[in-house]
Length: 199
Length: 184
Image 1 (cartoon, each protein chain N blue to C red):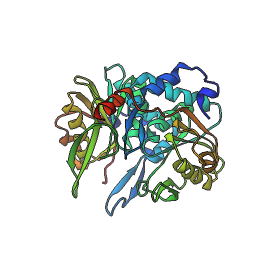
Image 2: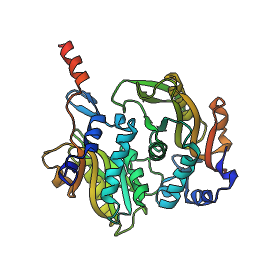
Image 3: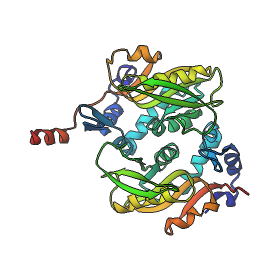
Image 4: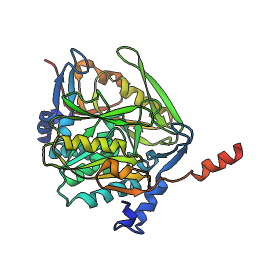
């Protein structure tokens, strides 16, 4: 569900956030228009708006766990957790977390990857949200949701800055509501000029 | 400088929340696990507050955080002091044009990257990470910022391992830490 269709229609902060995101064509491989949030982090006002919108949504929902997916989920999750009084739980690639972990595999376009959660970080019955910078197929988010549910948490929602709309099977895979601020943008004008000149 | 010596009452709570995991990632290393600190909202907030109190109003426009645990502490500090957050990443993660800085590990080398254009000449910067050990990674981070003309005001870490003498490796740059861990 997009913020602009859910209570924030016409909110100027959403346009500022969208415009602060840089599109990098053909990264990491040809055909992918990479949505680069590092430029959002350079814009203090737009970054603050991003965090504020999520905080406003979750502060009165008795959320005690904000789980962030490595590594870009780490850039947004902790600020949200701090503002709503929740714990921050990192969901990490294999062999990064030092203590006892549980693991959940998920499918990539080619092959599989894996997310891990520390045993004991989350208690049964805790209300949780999962944060990442972007949702496309939903594979990574669904692994995050499964990890939390395996330890008995109640995953209330997934939240991302950017969401690719109409991805077949995304919602079914994740199985939880997904709250998204903006859609991916197509090529930035400067890159378009470069591509025209080159052709 | 270590905040612990100043005996701010919040520091005891922070130190007790850090879990030590023996023999990770390999035998002999007492790993300082900050994830347990993040599970305590008050202690995590106190951690951020201590840094924010130190750096607010000092005209710092850049907080650079080292992948990945620097991404947990850096952004909340940046937001609170009105600075931009700049991620310093392992190779091939940043999508745009980057500059790279190699550094030596115990066995072999590694590399940190920063986006070209993220930081302007003359900007006053902090480098943030969860822990300083030998100081190799922090040095590489400072090099990246200085190569684009920024002025590194201080390195800020939650934990220092003083026995590894990382502080001496920072070319005279100040280091501020909240807690020290000594094996003895």
